[in-house]
Amino acid sequence: MTDSYRTYVAGRESPRHGLAKVVDHAWPWWEFGIGLGLLTLFGLFERKRNETLCLLGELKSWER
Image (cartoon, rainbow, N blue to C red; front, side):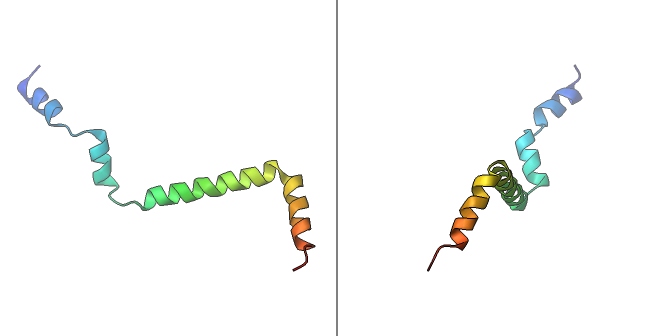
């Protein structure tokens, strides 16, 4: 191995630190979390569609 290769390998930053330099804001994580949460809720409502519709019907007929 050449000295320049060793310097390159030893001087490399960790991937996590490199990613932090590229994406230095938290908004992508917020966006990912909110999107994942919405998809999960949509999937849950679709999976239990009949129960959800019955519950909504009961809530609509509920007297105040």
